[in-house]
Each structure stands twice: as structure tokens, then as C-alpha cells.
Image (tube, rainbow, N blue to C red):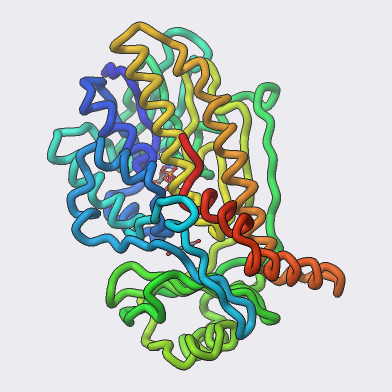
Length: 389
Ligand code: APR
Ligand code: PHB
């Protein structure tokens, strides 16, 4: 079997790249180790930067998103009982779109199917061969049958635990990591959101976040210990702790209900450099991870896809390799800014076990400065709505 671009990973990165390239006549095959339903069962963040929305439009996958999304002009930041709103549109002229990543992935799968896109599910033993040559190929097995795909390029869109990053030799790869000493316990409940915009809440008891998927589906998180498991938290205990971390006016209005999903995610900052090795290009979580505090996970995958998509179109349609040659440097320049913002938001709003009294004063002072300074709010807004591609 032969294709122009072999894409490993059928998450948002791989699907979006496949759809964009297909629309420009570039042939791809997506290899996904799970089933479509398994992939769609993942609950992930749902804040989309304008750049991601435009890519979805260019991919012809934005109709349902345009119909069903929320558009948020700002967000609330609170600490204890004090809160203030940051108006993204006032500072940047740009809102953010709220539309669950599960729905993004569903729309991408539907579009791939409608266009006859080639996706192989339940692949095993995916292996990238000769990535540093002019004739790379990928092998994999399905249902015990071995397969080989000869290709021009391999796009590693297989997430943090995938095979692509590991294909780059340790003598070439440099990795940067920070693991945070807490996790996020998240629940999904079929209840109306507590507020029309998101609430990022710091408190003496730890961080909390009030988000949403639609008018009757809310997503809430509380910072928890890494030693916790979801079973340790009854719904009642979750709701009680969430209320303790919110300003009273919101805690009183909170509509609680049974959780339909409950999970704990660890928080990590991670970047691997370079994001290219020969004919292999890493995209999205395969190359970098952010703590979810800045809502940058999907949005950093989007800018990778933007750069790689345009680089591949230039290669195939114009015989120009400048986009591909500049991919890693350009993608990393934006990734590191998103890493900084996500790290900063996480330090701003979480309680760290080893924080001294002085550290707490610094945190409070940072929040007070953000509350009172327009330029500080403008800087947060520019980063939250998305820096330019
Ligand atoms: N072979 C084939 N598929 C694989 C392999 C493998 N060896 N390893 C992983 N995969 C698949 C996973 O099953 C998953 O569906 O690759 C896909 C990677 O998808 P994501 O982890 O969602 O990564 P990405 O597409 O880059 O999307 C980034 O997803 O994890 C969130 O917060 C993250 O919002 C961000 C977005
Ligand atoms: C979510 O809705 O799941 C969400 C929103 C904003 C974040 C993180 C997660 O920063």
C-alpha cells in the first residue's frame, strides 16, 4: 500500500490534518489504535481559539459547531469571595468558542467518512521505518494481519503515549518536563452551567473551574491530590468541595446533579524538540503537553496542524520545502509561549503543597495586580484567545 502522508493517530490532530490535506488533493491514511467509539468517549476541554475555528471552517467541518457552540467574550477569575471579569473582546477584539472536543472529533470523523477518508482502526504494533531517509514506511497489524504503507511523510499525531516521539533517537531528541504536585478531578453533569461564562477559581482550599458543554451539560473541576482516585469522591463530596471554592453568590446558585462522568487527570508541562526528524513530523500531544488551566491542549495542536498542512501543500503543489524545513522552529516558537501561559495560569490559581507564607503573598499579589491592571488583563486576554499563528 502507498500514500503520500501516513498519519498515526485518529484524535483531533490526525483527523484535522487528514481532512485538510484531502481537500487539497493530498492522499493520507490515518492509523488509529482504538475504535472510533473509544476515541469519542474521551472527555476533553472545549475552548477553541479563533485559529482553530478557522481551520475547522477551512476543513469544511464547522457547520454544527457554528450552530451549537457558545461564544464567550470573557471569563471570571475569582479568589475566595472576590471575583472580577476579564473581557477578551475589549482587549483583543476576539472571543473564544466553547464547543466540546468530543464534538470536534465527532464532526471530523463524520467528515472523513463522508469524503471517503482512509482510517484504519484497532491497529497494533505501528512502527515507523526509515524516517530519516527519502523512503519512509510504516508497518502495523490488524486482526493478526501485517501491513506496510510506503509514504512520502509520516505525521505523528499519536498523543503523549504514542510511538512517533519515541521513534526520534534520544541522541536527537531533547525533552523538557514539569510534573505538577496535584491533579484535576473533573465531573460532567446534566445540569445548567452555574454561570454564562467560565469561572477560574482560586481559594485557600485549592483551584476549581466551572465550565460547560451546552445549556444542560456542565463540566466542573476541583484541584485534588495525586493520591486521590475518582472512587474516593462521592458526588455529594465533590459538590460540597466545589461550593467551598467558589464565591458565595455562585455557590448558592450551583445546580447539582448526578455525575455522568468522573475522572482525575494529572497535570504536566512537556515539550520535545525538535518536532521533525527526517520525513517524520510530530503534531499535538505527541510533541507537547500543557496543564489544562490555560485551555491550550487542542489549540496548540491546531497551530502545529496549520504549519504542517501549509508546509505540505507548498511541497506538493509548489515544489517548495521552506514550510516543511521551518516547521519545527515555527511550531515550537508558538508552543513555548502557550506552555508559559499555561504554567503561569496554573501557578496563579493552584495551592502548591510546599508553598510558604511568602509564596502565598506573591500569589495574592499577582491576582490583585491582574484584578487592577488593564495591561495585565490585556496580556492574559491575548494569550487566552490565542497568539497569532
Ligand atoms: N498507533 C495508532 N494510534 C495511536 C498510537 C499508536 N501507537 N498511540 C496513540 N494513538 C492514538 C490514540 O488512541 C489517540 O486517539 O492517537 C490519538 C492521539 O490523540 P490525542 O491524544 O487526543 O492527541 P491529539 O490528536 O494531538 O489531540 C490533542 O487531545 O489529549 C487532548 O488535551 C489534548 O486537547 C488536546 C488534544
Ligand atoms: C473544559 O471545559 O473542560 C475546560 C475549559 C477550560 C479549561 C480547561 C478545561 O481551562
